[in-house]
Image (cartoon, rainbow, N blue to C red; front, side, top):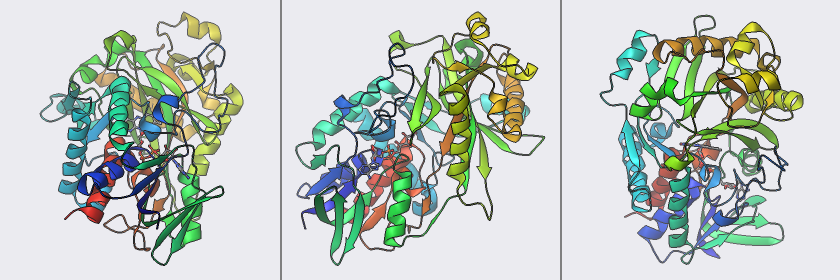
Length: 455
Ligand SMILES: Cc1cc2nc3c(=O)[nH]c(=O)nc-3n(C[C@H](O)[C@H](O)[C@H](O)COP(=O)(O)OP(=O)(O)OC[C@H]3O[C@@H](n4cnc5c(N)ncnc54)[C@H](O)[C@@H]3O)c2cc1C
């Protein structure tokens, strides 16, 4: 065997498995494989001037490379079992929270010490939401910000780089089971190891499906979230964001009884485009540094879609809707809420005259041509509901960017140790379908490392 431990994917899941395994046993020979670049070489070519939209780079600077999909994210580490994944179903609620707190300690010891921890505990906003049929989920949120998140990753990388072998630009093509371990194949290279942790995230979701087929691992996929990113003046949402920073609010619509929720809230942040497997969708982030603040706050409104038999590929459904917006808008479409309600498309001049200045250059258009009626009605109903706790949300000039799709990975059949039916092969983080967030993915990495090498 070349290695004691092979780790595929250098996102939070992979990084924290390597970090913890090394801490527990500094003698271990560990290899970490990453199809993207080292942190300092990760770059998205979109500059808003020469390159305005996604040019489908060989590896996406936003999604791939050291730090994974979260490297340029807002760095919101939500410490909660109420959202961000279902890790607690495997390892228990207390254990999951303890591990998320442990990850928080590492982050704050590596550059995040001056960042703020927000909490929904004892907030009066919970009552105000409830009085308006909105439900505020409970969490503590460490907001690192895109800038500090980068510094934390840099520090973690510096601690790992001389102690383990990190292979960048090394896409693992296949995983083979041996009698006494695993073999990873990448082009003409092969690497063997006694144990193997797969943590290939959302961008590795299709790849994970193929690996599961080749290794005979069962999977299921039945959920995708579809919606828009809302952008409005910071002041409108400041009663919520000043106290909680991120508020996860859930609403059940009267018309369809669907659940709509707020997701990824970025006070004074920017809206960004994101490329998943060649499909351009929308996202957002914000900075800790006040000099990078904008006038706006953005957040997603997502409708959860659960499918039943015979339909099996929920991600394909989400991709098809995102493809429609790419077809009509060449990428992301932006529309004023007022235009949507009046049934007219937004135009360049309507957006320019708007009192809200968009932070992303997107194509003015008509989201009702893209998003199915059911989900669009759900979103409109939710905007009016939010208007009651944050008056102004339903203003004419509120901007809606579409589409935002939250793809869920296949759920891989793993046990309470996150181990597959093949002993020594673990699937963690977002590619397992168990986690959908930075803190849950990181915690899953620590958990498996402790299971393998803890006393
Ligand atoms: C723009 C953006 C903002 C976000 N903001 C937040 C936030 O504020 N808070 C939050 O909780 N979550 C956020 N998320 C989600 C969060 O980033 C993910 O939940 C988290 O990164 C998952 O970690 P992971 O290690 O499982 O996978 P990832 O971070 O996706 O890492 C997987 C890594 O594996 C690599 N890989 C894939 N396939 C292969 C292969 N075959 N061989 C080698 N390497 C491979 C990829 O290149 C990638 O670097 C955000 C995501 C995005 C895209």
